[in-house]
Length: 70
Image 1 (cartoon, one colour):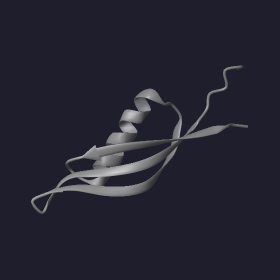
Image 2 (cartoon, one colour; image 1 turned 90 degrees about the vertical axis):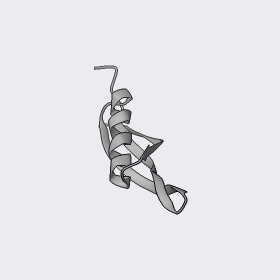
Image 3 (tube, rainbow, N blue to C red; image 1 turned 180 degrees about the vertical axis):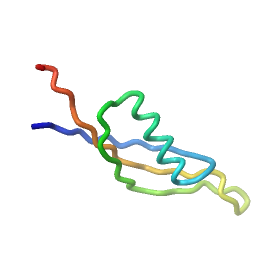
């Protein structure tokens, strides 16, 4: 039996929402191992003079906790 944890993270990209998600997952995986899924909770853009300057996502990542007894 495994136990999972959920953490909320935010990520941004100047390219796209997809890139913001990929960037967030890549960075999270440097600290957290066993990431199994990500739920994109919110999308946001930062605008300047009518143009999109930055794409932002808020996501919840699910990862399996390690069993230290093994």
